[in-house]
Image (cartoon, rainbow, N blue to C red; front, side, top):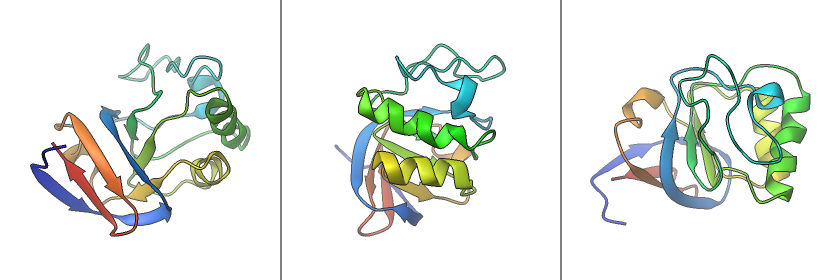
Amino acid sequence: MKRTAAVPGRVIVHGSASGPILASSQPISFLGGVDPKTGVITQRESPIRGRDITGKILVFPHGRGSTVGSYVLYALAAKGHAPAGIVNERPDPVVVVGAIIADVPMMIVDDVGSLAHFQAAEMDCDSGMIYLR
């Protein structure tokens, strides 16, 4: 991937990931907001409703909703529909636990909106950097 920008982040779940960016300006609830069988966003008020999170770098401010959302993220991974990586502004415990049990790399950045203008990202959780293009 040809890198055009880099953003430092705080590592929450180690690993590395790369893929197209799918960004939402709104929080995401994995319980009721994402179809666990397909990875498609079903959350009514979401600006990315109808989009598939599978293999994407999923960028959103923070999670919201029930603790069962952690298990939905795990179910997505078990069915091959998890995001490649997650980037948030605020580490919500439900999303953090879900990322841990689903083994999805996760980082925190100061402004997720700044990532939304890029097409793809490479998360390097060893260096704590997100490379963008």
